[in-house]
Length: 371
Ligand code: ATP
Image (cartoon, rainbow, N blue to C red; front, side, top):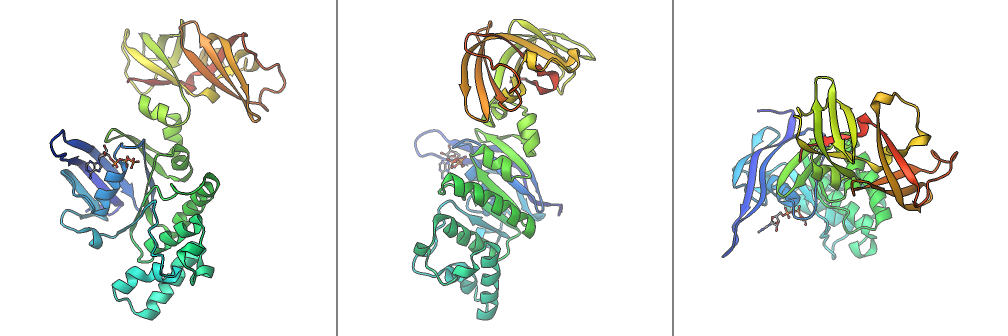
């Protein structure tokens, strides 16, 4: 029994048998330990297995292999309605003919919770989502965001240990979505309930989560906090899926106890020893964020041995108010995208199309990826 985790998945796999054709491995080898009170997000593109993973936790699907525990208890023989979880879907599926109050209290009524207790718990749940003034309204009299709040209240009313949320803001416009993200995160902190949240929106995941599992093709590639996921991606997929990223093909020239020398973009890049043991001749990929690159003359300071320089020519320069974005072609045929804050570079002439440019970054901003 490990009670420090709210949800544990060990070697979980789910295979769907397809009639007549190949089987689909929706998820494979999933190992996750989700802490009590954690806001945990499954992030990945459409079809990567996020919803399947959530449905396995909810008990709507049974795993083909592996073990699932909630609050330390094996869920193998526990049907969905007896698990200490509740699910909020993208489609809120409120009953149109019932008031907000009756929608939220519906599950409690089915369970024959006495009227007075029911009213009290519904009131509490509606207050949590700031909908207490609208208990008597019908869903059709509410905005999309308000309907989603009611759906949340309905999921919280029977006090689940774990709340599962499958793209709950998918139907909302961007502005409302951003507002709801902040509200939901604050509410989760206040309640201390474990949230397992599914999204394909990387900004949403970074904004809300304590930790994120990046999923691709039915597998979990990386689990880390938002800063780790953004700044220390461990695979090409994670690096490219979250935010913008430049990739450079590189070959290890020297690898010693103090650091490595890599040949990339017709230059030598020296980095301190990283996470991986590298061997001379090995092909790797370097990943550098556009905002980590600068044009050399603006940033001459900093210890020379930590500086990485790459020569190129400006092909595109776009002004977008807060930033300028550049595409810089390298002699190797690769392109580096650069993003400069306008305020940071105001004191000097902005590079223009056709300029020869020396790009600069520090060694710490260069990730070495093996795939
Ligand atoms: P989305 O964001 O589009 O919902 P997802 O990451 O949630 O995607 P899943 O819905 O978990 O992905 O699907 C993973 C894979 O499993 C997909 O290839 C999907 O077609 C397949 N799949 C899911 N449910 C079933 C099912 N009931 N029968 C057959 N295949 C399924």
